[in-house]
Image (cartoon, rainbow over all chains, first blue to last red; front, side, top):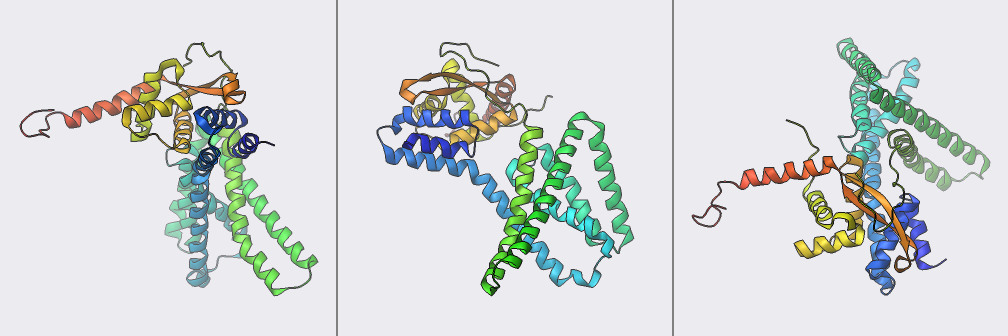
Length: 240
Length: 111
């Protein structure tokens, strides 16, 4: 594979193939054929620009998860909820990972982000203060009204479906990661280092699963028209 | 009054460069136009992510041109500003003009 083909393959992992090809074509036309250092430096810049929001979003989600875990370990044990609340906790934890990620990744104007935050904030407050009825009741009402309001409009239903899908995929991915980690530790020869490594990597995997689920659902359900239009001749007229 | 998604400063620069280029706006020419008009060429990465973001916002549209040998057989991605994009850039520029109006920046003379 040539330099150009490697660069195109690399960028195509982050953008669609047509976009990757046009970016590499632009770099070649700008002198990338003659100056390899400039070419690869530009490819690196493009790659960093394409993944910067994902990386910052990942860091934000991870930070949120870490702060929540610190708070859960220190203040929360005094008010542990009943065992029956576990499924609510599990779904909420995926939502709490997804909300900061999509906030950074897609911005506050994005409907998916707005819905994730509108559900995450009251749900988190309601679950964390489950023993205070005056807090729980308004939170439950707020969550229900957000869901009902979203279901009224077609666009809202689509966003709701995408979020529910992201939560389902994220939850399934996290359960899968935990299962595989347990199986690995059972099958591998016992080692303290290995156990610590697996335990430390699990939070990263959880955030990655939640982020991947959001990316997947946002890409397939909320960006169906995001593809390049048909080719036109160089002398063709402008579209739009 | 209609609400337009207000473009950022760099987005406005890119939109204006695309408008100046007309039918021949793609990555290379947009960069060159910005460099010629502002004195500094944007990084390719910044330009492509801005174009993608503006496309998501509906400010621009893109379509593929024909592959050319000079580009290693790769097609150009032509960009055109949509009506929404034109309205947004005009609204943003009008705001700047309104803010500038009446200011005495250089002694007594109005700008």
